[in-house]
Amino acid sequence: MKKAWWKESVVYQIYPRSFNDSNGDGIGDLRGIIQKLDYLKELGIDVIWLSPVYKSPNDDNGYDISDYRDIMDEFGTLADWEELLAEMHQRGLKLVMDLVVNHTSDEHAWFQASRQSKDNPYRDYYIWRPPQQGREPNNWVSFFSGSAWQFDELTGDYYLHLFSKKQPDLNWENPQVRRAVYEMMHWWLQKGVDGFRMDVINMISKTPGLPDAPIVNSSRYQFGGLYFINGPRMLEFLGEMKQEVLSQYDIMTVGETPLVTTQNGIEITHEETGVLNMLFQFEHMDLDADVGGASSRWSVKPWSLVELKQIMTRWQKDLEAGGWNSIYLTNHDQPRPVSRFGNDGPYRVESAKLLATFTHMLQGTPYVYQGEEIGMTNVAFDSIDDYRDIEALNMYHELVAEQGIAESDILPILHAKSRDNARTPVQWDASPQAGFTSGDPWIKVNPNYKTINVRQALADPNSVFYYYQQLIRLRHEQPVIVYGRYDLILDDHEEIYAFTRTLDDDRLLVILNFREATPVFTLPADIQFTQPELLISNYEVDAAEEIHSLTLRPFEARVYRL
Image 1 (spheres, rainbow, N blue to C red):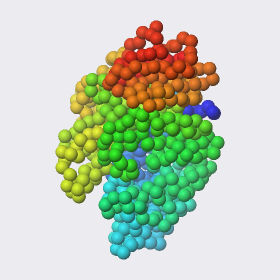
Image 2: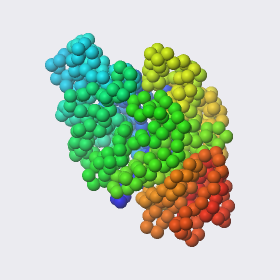
Image 3: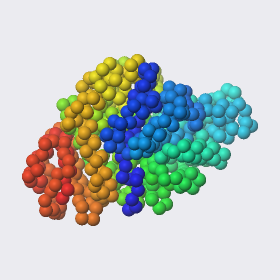
């Protein structure tokens, strides 16, 4: 396996709106990030992935871009961004920008021109279709509920939007669109960015003819992913992007790719023939959902550890032969992992450390989402009025208005699954508004900020923060953690997730108790070793303890070198 800096790195994701507010307007900003760079340097991370900071009307919190070469007013100026990049590079930190090119904002100059007339030079930058029998061109549902088509009275046609109606999809079949995107990417790379995280990048190719989606339920609109996910020209388009842009720089590229298989993963990330360094797959994010597709977020069921093992092991083993994984349990679109996969009550600290051990000991590049390193939890707002996420608000109104479901039945689902769980402000200290802002925050702070915050974590040597710091340091020091082969043991155990990592003669044993119970770990007889060395654990451990048979404490994690 080839060595690469992006394989050896740990990435920290910043959602700027909720990170740190420097001017008291209640919204995090670029200067707020600059103020906290020393904190991130102390944590030990290598790369910062910045969620979109481009000019945007903010219908979908910055993922609706109106100008790719300017900065959102609320976040600051291009000069602030340039200062942020310089301050990061001075500290040895790299910057990965969010690249959102499946769609733009409907306020982007390209779309404004596109809708003026059917023969406008920009018309073909987007996907326009005439009505079919007075209705939408097909039956596709939007990810944010309702039809994926919006009628535009100016020219009497519909345009496609897989997300919000203010996020029209770009037409990647048009070579001029692709050229304009590549020019914009070069512009940022020449400014010094160190890579791109590419938003829903496996949706850029749509099946010609845009066929109707199969009808699987009684809804008026159906999930059409079959015709726009991993489409017929996706690899061709990304291959062209690699040739025209990516191959000319030493950068990190990661694709957000919903509904991919490991075979897709190998094709996209193979180090000889692939197009990107790594991808985000979402199979494990659907473990606690009853249904797949566009509405999987809006169902909750207990998740199975055996199923988690099966999914992660398949991705670990299948990509072993030349692909590369991104390892994460949360981001700006997912609930907080300690509330979802751990225990955000009495075992919050232990389970936060357990989950960190899990993600940092797998093969792949680990991602830390802001607040994860102090064990921030989901928030349970008691009214829909406190939610801000367009997806949650649209789904709520659809469930109440169209299906007559009571608010009291919907709020528990939001408490578990809403994207706003990850978007409450970072809890810096116990002062008002958690030290995030001196004003009124754009979304309420989680009420538990007085006990869970950065200041408290930095003062406690046993905090989640210092455990993350220790894991990151281990990754930098131990090549086996980065490049070692992964092998699962105890496949069917319903409480313990255990695996080995092996590089030449170096071997690690990772033991994780994912439950509150106290199961006994029994080492398989075929694992031979001389003297085990404890590398890290989330409880006090007697160094002389025999490891062939261990009674594990709730959410206990241990890593041994054998």
